[in-house]
Image (cartoon, rainbow, N blue to C red; front, top):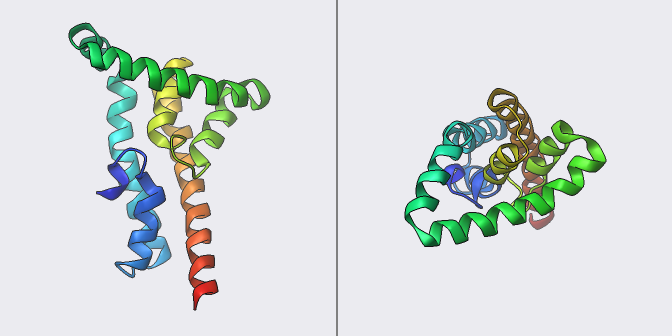
Length: 146
């Protein structure tokens, strides 16, 4: 459930699974990736109609989406120009920092016109890479503090 929360995503869920629930790495990775991808499936397919509906009826939604979309566009565009749009999306999602995860990756795919199926595959790859990075960082931290 933690992996479904924006910003927290897998970056919080995986350490919690490893440290609090004492899950094995592979089990924690599997459930964290799955939890992170559940909302992304819906976001990728429904972002356009939901954004249109909310911005039409709520002023706050227009402000929020403008802020978020501009932020994602700015962060993603640099990588897209440097690495190409597909690799940039994987890297953007894989970087374990706030506002660069799967939720923002789904927004980037929407903003840059990446087809939904391809976006889901690329975002999933990025989430798996992020999980491996977060798992290594968590494991390294455990080792250092023992």
